[in-house]
Length: 299
Image 1 (tube, rainbow, N blue to C red):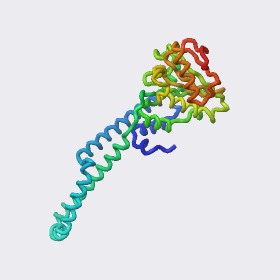
Image 2: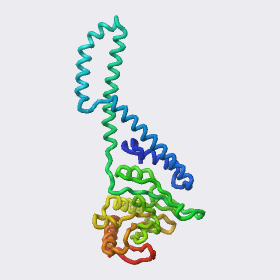
Image 3: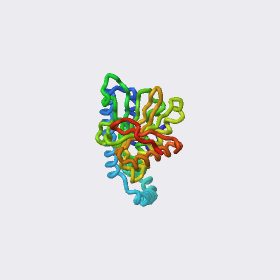
Image 4: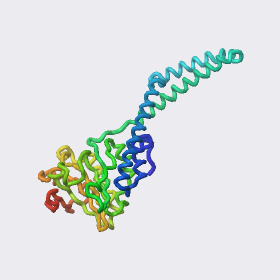
C-alpha cells in the first residue's frame, strides 16, 4: 500500500524505510545497526525541521496579515509600475531593485503557505498509552530474550497506521516468528514483573484459516488495545498481545496483568471474542502466567 501524504512527511516514514531495508529476516546485529541509522535519520530530520521553522519565522508573515500584505503589495506594484517602466530604460539599478522586491514578496508568500501546509500535516491524535511492536524470530543459537527485537514505539494514531502499513502482514510471516504489541516498557515475556501475576486469553487459528482469518483477528486485537476498548474498569489489565505463526497452526493471545481478578478477566474474555467476531457460545482458553495451564474458560 502506498504511503499517504501524512506518512511521507512524517519522520516515522524515514524510520520504516530504514526498517524495510533490513527486513524481518535480519540478524540481531543488523537490527541494532538499523537502529543507529534510524536514530541518525530522525535527528537529521528533526534538525532540518527546526531550520525550516526558524527560516519561516524570519521570512514568512502570519496568515492573518498575508492578505493585507498581498493587497498592499498589489497596490504598490500598480502605482509604481508606470514610473518604474519609465525609469527602467534610463536607470538599470532601479529595475534591478524592483525585481528584487518582487522576488522577496513572492518568497514571503510561498513561505507562509508552506507554513500552513506544514502545520496541517503535523496534526496528530495521541494514544492513551504508548505501544511497542516487537518481532520474534526463532534461532536456536540465541537465548530466547535475544530473539525478541523491538521494532518501534508508537504514540499517535497516525504513527500506528504508518507502522502497520510498512510491516509484513502476520499471515505472510515465516513459521516460527511472532509479532507482539505491548505497552511501552513491558517486555513480552512472563518474567517481566508486570506479567508475572497475569495470564492470557488464547485464540487458536487453524493453519487452513490463516489467509482468511489471521490478519483480521490480529488487527481487531490491535484496535482493542490501542483504542482502550476494555473500558476504564479493565484498562489496568491490558498489557499487550501476541500473534504466533507456526507450521501446525497459529495462535493469538491477549496478555493481562492480574489473573486473580477473575471478574475483569472474564469480562475481557467476552470483549475479546466480540472484537474478533467469535461466537459468544464458543469457549476460548485462559492461561495463568505461573502455571501455563488452562484455568478459566470464557462463558
